[in-house]
Amino acid sequence: MRLPLRRRLLVWAAAALCASGALIPAAAAADRATAAPSAAETAAPALQATFTEDFDGSAGSAVNSGRWQLETGDNSGNNHERQYYTAGNANAALDGQGHLVITARKENPNNYQCWYGSCQYTSARMNTSGKFSAQYGHVETRMKIPRGQGMWPAFWMLGTDIGSVGWPNSGEIDIMENIGKEPSTVHGTIHGPGYSGANGIGAGYTLPGGAAFADAFHTFAVDWSPNTIKWSVDGNVYETRTSADVGSNQWVFNKPFFIILNLAVGGDWPGDPDGSTSFPQQLVVDYVHVSESSSGGGGGSITGLGGKCVDVASASSANGTPVQLYDCNGTAAQQWSVNGDSLRALGKCLDVTSGSTADGAKVQLWDCNGTGAQRWTYNASTHDIVNLQANKCLDVTDNNSANGTRLQIWTCTGGSNQKWTM
Image 1 (cartoon, helix red, strand yellow):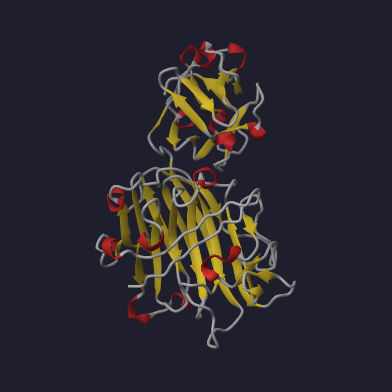
Image 2 (tube, helix red, strand yellow):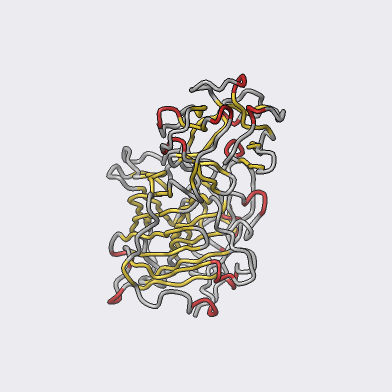
């Protein structure tokens, strides 16, 4: 059994925040993994697509910046990786046929400097931090991975709270990782406090008959629910982890996570490219799809002024749809779930427009992104719903109980138009 040490740095767009990680299937945990592939178990009922990225667009164009941000640099030397991650479409571009192509090249066109001197390779890494996050459901990609000594493609997730709690308290879910010297095997792993680094908990999946993953497209997925994560390849469940696997340590996966795609070159675990490695190498991604439970951590109505319900106008899931007060009717537009510190309906999050913290800022439905505009807390004793970023209460505008009255945030006053029952 291998004992590599993997450390990562996530380069944030707004600030430099360090995140490290490791992928080591711990011997003590190996007996928890499914010994042989079995038919994939059906995901939780009532799943609703919340992120559908099919990489449609003209050949050579960059990824959608509304969904992805590209990280740049040499990963600060973590893992002793050899690549320099570039921006734009230099190493990550659409092919015009519904694919994202991440290309690793043996080059240094702009005199990039790496931890070891002049960089030898370029590649790309991207994430959805601040743009999309998910909690529970089915997270899947279909991709064709590269081949060759030193290649290290990965599809993984980090907790959205990494900026405040750090790694490994944020949690990390590695949905798929491969190293070139193991062409027939991929790995799935979790990392958290007390089970990171050499104690990461995971297992591998090996294709039958010595087939290589680089020969064809394959699907890699997790089915994720409270206290349980299941990994599958091509629909075959090969690993299941539950909160029992972490023992007395904290299970840190019952909260929102964002997605990361990257192709690293070299490093302590895969080893560096050698004379047998040909360049360029490509990670070709067909899609990334996320479907979340419409009921999340337990859905239900939120009632307030006049006994009326928090309602998504016209039951529309479009970004920017007003959230209002309306007669309770039991429809999906009034079914809200608590997912970590977010409130969700119709697969999207309760959001303060433009991230404003001002009195009177209206609330709306928006793609879940883990920002402060979507972080809420509910006090069951006082019946306040408070936006954590603004430290202000969810409020019925002008204390008006008429159907269609917009909801907003306002300085907490204790008034009846700020009292809610969940």
